[in-house]
Length: 112
Image (cartoon, rainbow, N blue to C red; front, side):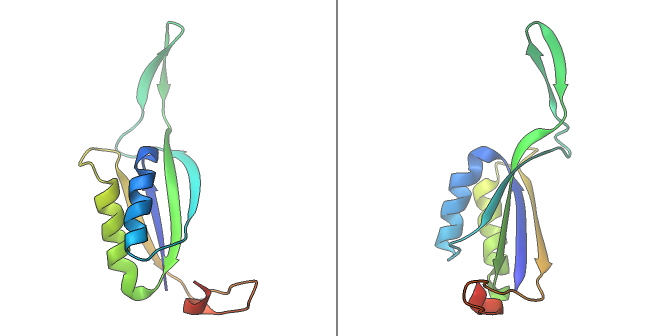
């Protein structure tokens, strides 16, 4: 099993969700997060004063998938969230040792 984490721009969520549905992913956890990388943030004017927004709003998606779906899921996210511009986001994958569905006690892939 593989945990996939993706940090994306908020406006790409629906497109990413649809792309993941097509790959067979029907569940994920979404967090509203803030951060910066190469994009660095930007300056804004508020009531005549300029200030810097260092942390930009992003969404963090997390899901655990079977090993054989890893490449398809990563590709689906990258294609759906990608615009070719700075700040599109990042995708990380991690091996998962064990999973358990609390309600039924099912383990590992059956728990997904």
